[in-house]
Image (cartoon, rainbow, N blue to C red; front, top):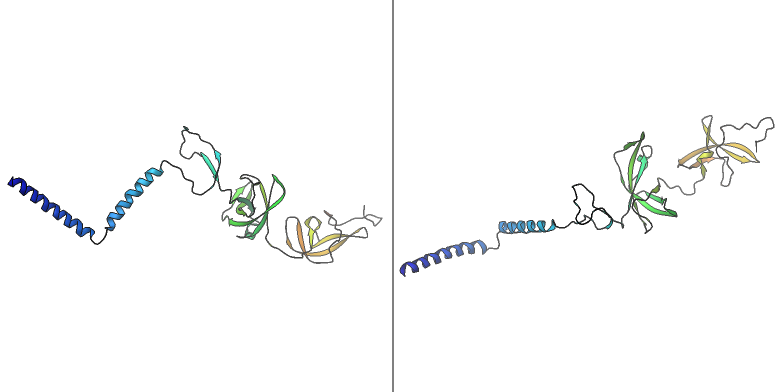
Length: 242
């Protein structure tokens, strides 16, 4: 009986020592190392649970499904396509001749082959720093954002973009097809009294179809000859052949 009582006393002393040590450890608040270790265990458990689920890195709509339940999916295989239909982007190829005129936030208009008689507004949000060679031509990818997209636009549609490089109010424009170079001077042929008359001009900004007239004896409403020869030859009659 004495031995048993002594053993209990020694056990109680040991428990007292352990309790005192634990009290000293916890009396000033939880130990930072213990909290870090506990958080690491929680994170490991949470990561294990999340392995059973797939989460998209952004909110969107599943627009394509290539796998079904039971399929064996290899690494790198596309099973689903997710599109953010509220934030549509268009990649436009711009030639190296024009790329240095493209800037971030430039406005533009877009049209789609599948959507007739409708133009959409957009802006440039990214300009590639590296070009790619295609069929002997160097093109740069310019990414534009649609600002007024509607339900008619679908991912994958073909779009044409007109990027607004410069805006000139009240400019007098002539079709590029009417401009010719004669003796080092740009001219257009104006139809006066049914006779094509050469008028020297100076052009400013230009697009694929039109050029701005900076100077020259031209006015709005003048009739121009499109695709004219450099020189007109009216023959012996001295009149145009029309």
